[in-house]
Image 1 (tube, rainbow, N blue to C red):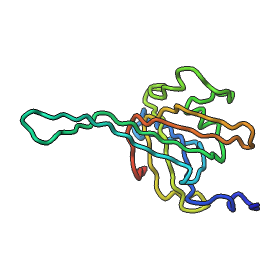
Image 2 (image 1 turned 30 degrees about the vertical axis):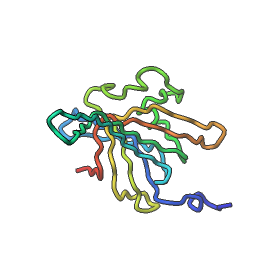
Image 3 (image 1 turned 90 degrees about the vertical axis):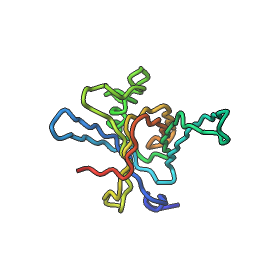
Image 4 (image 1 turned 180 degrees about the horizontal axis):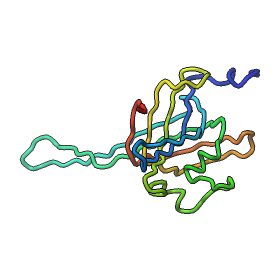
Length: 172
């Protein structure tokens, strides 16, 4: 049995933040809360794109057209839960109670000029210095599983990404 948590963690550490970007001011103001600390192996990022084929009578080669795509981001084996981050995602209310109303599904336009984004921060070292960040815009949490029998609670979160995906996002 490992003596410390660090002995049990294997692989690149990744910190997932919920960030509110308030663009009502001349300079956007970002407020960030840590949602989780996971290992790179416990995350999944998938892009599925559909195509449609069309064969015209006078053309020998069939043409394929991209039609729809879906982007999903999920992570599990959550080490810690920050209720303020879950509150930013409308998954819990201010009292820490699970939220099942329609605002849980619709994070956009809750507050004018404020966007909720997800930052995936790859950490350089144990001090928490960030190596690089991916930013996901317009996310919708569609699955939240919580295993209540453990302390702290273990959970898995699945999100749909409806907006932009910034690879290697940097703040100016």
